[in-house]
Amino acid sequence: MNHTRLGAWFFLVFILGLTACSNEPYRDESDGSATDSIMQPEQKPFSQYDYKPPTQYGTFIRPGELEPAVDFWRKTYSLWHRSEVAVHDDRYLDVIYEVFVLPGNVGEGLTSEQKQIVSQRREFWRTQLSVLEDKVRNNIALNANDRQIIAKLNHNGRHVSHVLTGAAERIRSQRGTRERFKQGLDISRRYDRQFRRIFKEAGLPEDLAFLPHVESSFQFSAKSSAGAVGMWQFTKSGAQTFMPDNNKIDLRLDPVASAVGAANYLKHAYKKLNDWPAAITSYNHGIGGMKRAQNQVGRDFVKIVDTYTGPAFGFASRNYYAQFLAAQEIANNPRQYFP
Image 1 (cartoon, rainbow, N blue to C red):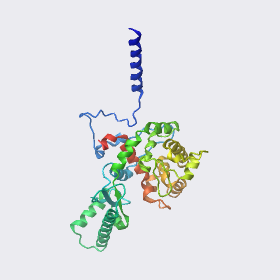
Image 2: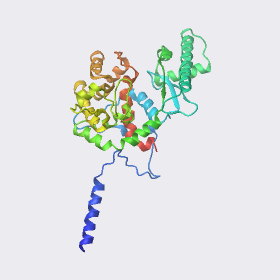
Image 3: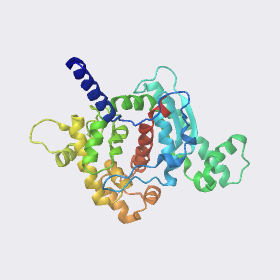
Image 4: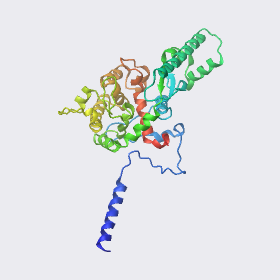
C-alpha cells in the first residue's frame, strides 16, 4: 500500500470514528421506514414514558392524577393549531366543552375581532353552565344538550354535582400552539447537546434542557409582562443571583449563559424543596411559594395542585409541571407528534 492510500485509509477510519461517537440530540432510533411502529399518544404503553434516573438528584415522577393535565398540554403543543381554541374547565382539564376554529388569517397575535369571538364563546359556555347548574339544583328536566354537558363533567367517575358547582366561573380558553412548538423544536436542535451537557455536569437530569419549550418556545429574545427576558426567562434579580457577571452585558439574552443559570437555580431549588415537581414548579412560582405550599399542604404534589390556594398559585403554577412533562414527552419523540 503506497503512502497516499495509507493516508486516505487512516482519514476514512478517523471520520467513521467521529460518526460512531456522535450524539444525536433527540435520540430517535426510528429509521423512518414503513416497518417502524408509530403509535398515537393514547396508545403508547406507559412504560415507554419512564425516565432515565439522573446522576445525583432524584427523578421526575408522573402521578396518574396528573395525566389529564399532561394530555391537555400534549394536545395544546402538538395537536391544536394556533387557529384553534379550546374552551375548557380550568381545574378539570379533561373537561373540554368545544374546540372551535377562528375565522380569517390567524397569526401569533389575534385581531380585535378574533379576540371578541373567543370572549363570546367563553360567555356562551358560562351561560350554558349557569343554566344547567340551576336546573340540577331545582330538579328541572334536562334536554339533550344538558345531558351531553353532564357526560363531559362526569368523565373519570367524578360526581357531577361536585364538578358542576361553580363550573361557570371556571371557564377558560386555550389557543393551540402546534406551530410555535414545532418552531421551538427546530431551534432547540442548535442547543440541545450543549444544554444537556450543562445539566449533566451539574449532576441534574439532562431533560431539564427541555424547559424552554414551556418558558419561551426557545425564543432567545422572548419578554414577559413580568419582566423576564430570554430563552430561559430570567428576571434581573434572578440573573444577578444565579448567573452574576461583572460585565454590563445582559446575559439573559445569551442562551448558554442562561442555561448555566437555570442549572444553578434548579439545583438550589431541588435542595430546598427535595423533589422535582416542586422544584420545577418553583421556576414559575418561586422557591418561597412552593415551600409555603409544602408547609401548608404537605409534600404530596398532587395534593398541592388540588388543594393549595396560596397567593399567586393560579392556573399557570398549578399546571407548570404537567406542561413540562408534556413538553418532555413530545421533545423526546418528535417524529411521533410531528411526523
